[in-house]
Length: 136
Length: 136
DNA sequence: CAGTATCCCTCATGATACTG
DNA sequence: CAGTATCATGAGGGATACTG
Image (cartoon, rainbow over all chains, first blue to last red; front, side, top):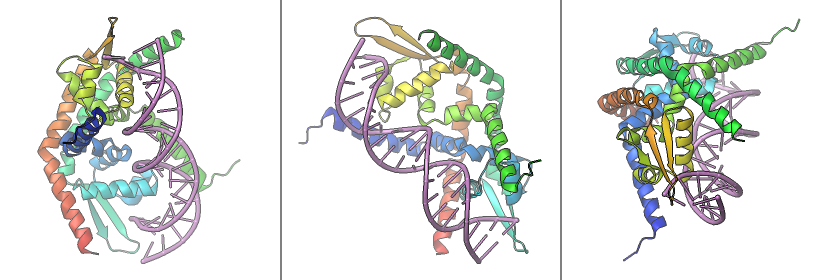
């Protein structure tokens, strides 16, 4: 029988734990909304549908690559719908789906906490940093 | 007068937008809680204080480096407190601060949405992927 | 026990240029 | 207009080994 070393044992545990995390709904959702551009697209579309180029202008920091990639992943996950109008030139509108809309209250909860407590976090951070500097 | 090219203009916009994002409370909070290990530490400590080694065992996938780094950042932000007992060997306990505790309802909102809707997301994803494959 | 220090490597992002 | 393709970079994360 293969006697496991402590190292081997820990590695197996890690693999199992990682598998668990991949399947954990909360982790999945966090992965999704924590993406830098996802939350911004969600907010941008909260007010109604927008065209690709409108989004590009609404979010001046995003590259085409990132915007496309973000929209694709959101479409794939059923959170955003993509509607192509075959005119010349082409017109593409993006809109929140019903499922995507249910996410807005969650985003709002995050926003509310942030606006209420982020000052405390910043203050704590300054305190911490000044202590570290003082001790040097 | 320096006439700006469209490229220069876009770059300035991007810089300004990035600055805005860095200061946006919601983005800050998302950055914080989206960290892979932060949410797990938060949940682990929701049940009460734990020692460093306990956390290491609670989360078998985390490296010492990452755990320490995560705990430090949470301590810095005033979300977790660190108490050292100068015995031999040393004992260090980590605990949610009051501020850290206020974050739990937000985590719960995320968890609730995830548990309610993640199946829909997964289903949408499969639908999307099968369409893509079919079209090839 | 509770960390540091170091190396390494992948993966995500972004800039740029091109296209149906 | 709404993308795709390609390349370069650099920051984050892990494995490992060492320490007060």
